[in-house]
Length: 563
Image (cartoon, rainbow, N blue to C red; front, side):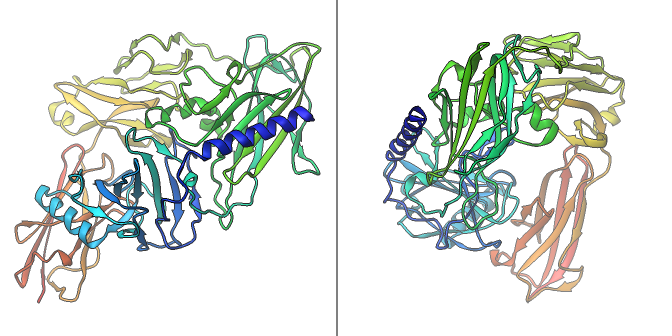
């Protein structure tokens, strides 16, 4: 027990020392409401770690967003995806704060960016103002909260980055107050046989381990009978006060007989390494069951730098006749700790469950480039596309190719090239490469055509085909009718949609002059705000042109009147 207590104290003290490196009294909150999180830093997301915190905005848009400290705006971006409308604010102390999914900017910044949008005749823009061009003081209004870009609901995505390296750091390390008196929640526990001779409870396959809660609040797992080299993983989440959201765990430590084998946390990480999340989790298990298992050991291809300690890659060599006490400690930033103890006894027994190995004719050596002709298409994998060697399932079809399945992660883009010689030029002019999802529903992938070949670069394994799209997008008025008087209207609204290849471009004019229409992809809406004040005629002619990804075009025209 003494070793366990010392290990726990060391774990807490090291974490506190790391937190002391960040200024606690420099930054104010970006909002004037209590900070309640729907997502935290380092949280597991699809193919990446969450690089900030998601702050709830009371299920509504339009809350004032304030500069957390003095600085100069270094970057503004308006995008259909990602952070949507976002501001980057550089501070004199070497940090940059980021405010994403904004509804709109403050009046001064809104006028600045709208001028650029009209100059470029584009809703989507990205600008890097000159240093000092847009200065703000601590507490200045810079924007209003929203739901733009790849947001699933109204909130503020907030980051604090190191300005020099652009490395995101955990915003909660800077003294922002978030109430949290709740321990992380452990949902599931798993054991992995990692060596060729390893077994766990008479199985050489992944094994789920049962556990029970103890009177002191910790958890005790059922005894594990094992031999060979094994590793452990868990499914868990953390929850802050006043919110039901299941957020990520800040730090993880694994001890073997009191010695630290694994210690990592989400104090910071690099954007260049974020895709290595696919080696930290059990990607195949996630693909099957949509559950995140975090590994306490290091898998092949894992180049993450989040580890403070990693002995034997977090793997445990179990000798027959020996006993081991494994502890996994899950901790949040408020020092709430969940502890699970796993007793392991070294014992080799006859196997009752044998893992099935799906061997195919194609074995991928991850460190080497690989090129395959699948009839309808060719596929090329550059060296180190994958994290580890494996048997790949490749299937040829007359018009489709199947490249393994979506449960194997790729770290780099690979290339798929279709030969479309057998199709007429008329057909080829409307074709694109699609990935076929559930029920073979096609989804557009960025397609490049050269003569009779079509090429796409992607990181997603699965089934691909050449698909033809001959139907033009649809455009409908939403809040007005043709020949209507719109004197008291604040905005015009239309809906646009495409049934197959998706919207590529759109443009709108009033009386022949380009106008800014904001495109919200979540509800397929185009909106023009009359506050732009470019109208000087009573009779107005609106024209909207929308083109899909293979060049099908629709044009909408309407006449309306305003005093």
